[in-house]
Image (cartoon, rainbow over all chains, first blue to last red; front, side, top):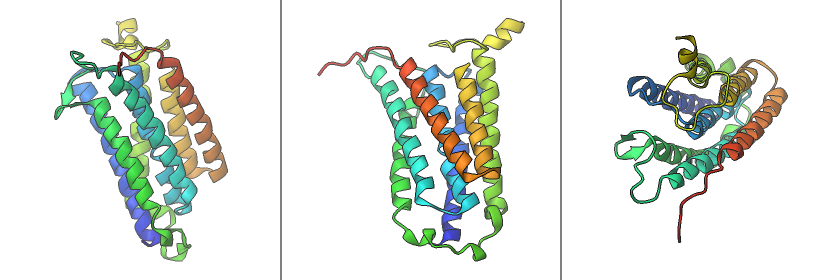
Length: 185
Length: 52
């Protein structure tokens, strides 16, 4: 895999992260299901997955950049596994609604494990780490730049949404109202 | 509030990774990851009702 192809793949991974963040947002707004603290932490860790690809696009692919995403994916898998285990007992209906039979935290666990596997697979291709920057447009071209700004925008929107949901205090364990809207209504 | 700050911090790390220096981005990433782990440990207090 050449460096240029690796950067295209990194841009695609940013679009995948953006899709996850947008889907979580859509579920929150359309189904009026507010994310719990552990759900918010999983969203943050999905967003943090994007830092490795952004560094790869900006500075060229390096194993250390993939390592950042691997560490984040492991942390995300731990957080989502804990939430799966919290609701694993028979009779427990779980938190929130299910999508295609699985709750969002189960999908999150599947997503983080898939990220670990894909990142390990990407590290198998050594040619991407050879410098061919002469053949590479600076900052990866428009496709990659749009992906970077999309992920940054969605993460910033999540910051605003979380502020509206939790207000200036601690987030409720089982949130049902937007605290900031309640305060000003 | 801590989650709002973590989202903001994650956005900041992305901006630094995209526009700033690589070293600063790596350092900020480490700080945010430590904050994420601390937040996880703070909230993971419920006993898991598991039996084996």
